[in-house]
Length: 406
Ligand code: PLP
Image (tube, rainbow, N blue to C red; front, side, top):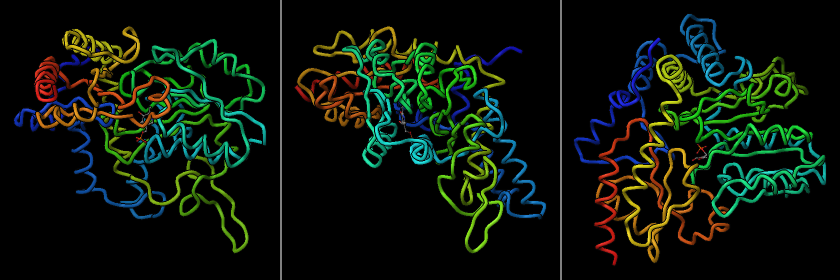
């Protein structure tokens, strides 16, 4: 079946028309993406026709909502090459990572090691730093090279029989660096470590297959892939999920409760305490099944890389500019600094000219410290709906900002 031309996807994002009318450019998709029309339609349809809780009622509305919700789980599983009962719906990537840090704590003992990298987002840093403190574990942090890529030989040296957790990002949200998981995971498999992949950035631009990747857990957020905020997913190998205790306890997680004891339900119910974001799961599944059927994922990254490369060419004649991260490994992100200028000042002026992008430490303070980026970076991030016009707007606004600041 022929797939949709990536450039035509732009029409599927209603916010674009609104932005075009206002002369706005959105270059902040690494923070959150715009939402597809099918997301809005799914939410509206749900509120009009299907409102009910899931797994809690015998009436027809509840049964319908439960069926749709479980179908959404199957679609999400299919999207990342997993089985249906290996998907837990979460709020976001951060919740998935906190869930894992808490639930895996029972498998660790004093002196065990957790390995992360210097390029981790705080969401994949703080839960492990905290866990290490609480249980007297050693937090090992694999360094990045000067360019911001994972230093593989140094990483390999840190792996050993005490490494019980490896948690790393697939794509850096600062530099766009794609970590070579096909080399990293086989190295880590020589240790007893649980392998956790943070796919917050990769989910929207790389085809994911958790089974082929051979990770134990993988997490992502719906809001980075054109779906609502407040819905995300955690993949876990079935054999491992069966062994994990519930993260939060409450309605929906149990098989039987007495005054003194609780028998937990099987996964995934065991892990989804309380009423979930049902319509969010439905909207996420709508996006994922659309992308799977209609879009060639290789084309997404190709287009986004093309825009990054055009942006870099266009901005490179600006005096004092340097781009952060390796030129050949930026995926859909272009981070830069301009000598002598605070990145927040630049972003403030760009925002006034209706170019939306992010400046600062991007929740990666340890990476900023390592790369000596005192005021962080300015980050332009590109998605399927961006155009050459956005690059023009960025350049024009940047030149204006410089004329005001110098
Ligand atoms: N990990 C990475 C690499 C990210 O880029 C982000 C968000 O930008 C997160 C984790 C946290 O995602 P969320 O805020 O959706 O939980």
